[in-house]
Amino acid sequence: MRLLLDRMGDQITITDGVVEAAAGNKYQGKEVLRLLLDRKGDQITITEEVVYTITESFGQQIVRLLLDRKGDQITITDGVVEAAV
Image 1 (spheres, rainbow, N blue to C red):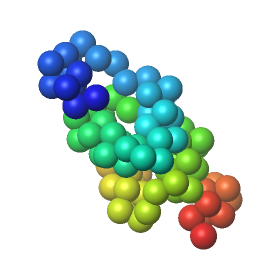
Image 2: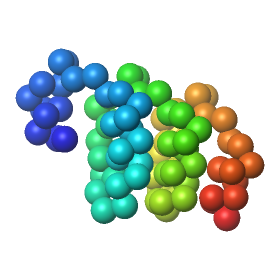
Image 3: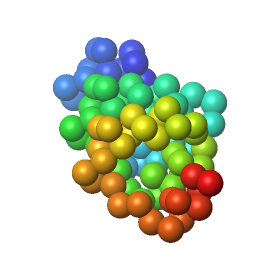
């Protein structure tokens, strides 16, 4: 992903599917999400499903980063709170 963004960043559109795939990737998802937020954060839409998956899958650090970058676009539902507990 880093290579693609380095070489073709202006031509790449980050879809909901890409964000959902990164959120569901328990092995490298945290790094991919951080990269996407750093490079394409203004183009990323964070759905409720993505917030739930990130909260359930990753630690506080990536959730905090997500809230810092996209907090004004995130709705915290009961399901998200339950995933965080």
